[in-house]
Length: 38
Image (cartoon, rainbow, N blue to C red; front, side):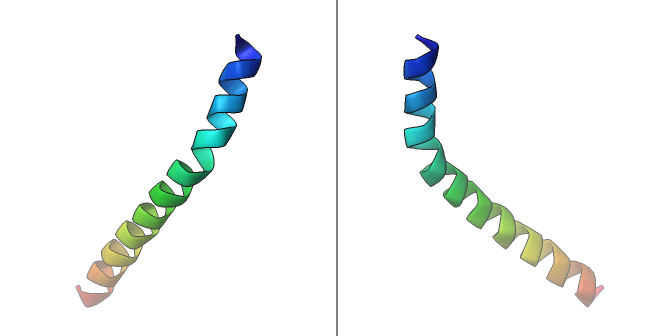
């Protein structure tokens, strides 16, 4: 069971991590630019 879970996690996590990191970076850039404006 743990091995299967790890395999499924490794197969799924890269895409979700990439999407989350992209969204997180966009959010950071927005907040940073907002702070620079004010």
